[in-house]
Length: 98
Image (tube, rainbow, N blue to C red):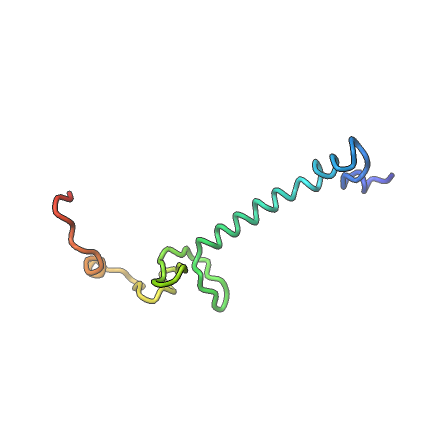
């Protein structure tokens, strides 16, 4: 046999499948981990897809839908937040809070 089947784990060392799963077949788990990390990151980013993906964190839920958007794409979150805006959005502190 040549060197290529040996490098690819295709020659019969301790059985044909042992060399496959300890060689190139072991990379399947690594590809799955990278794919899962990408899917999780994509789930946490802004869900707006125009003209391309928005890679900002999607921290603002959109009312009436399961989607989350970034500050730039959310319809009601202002671009620049001031102290007056925060005071108008949040209610007064409840009694007994310190």
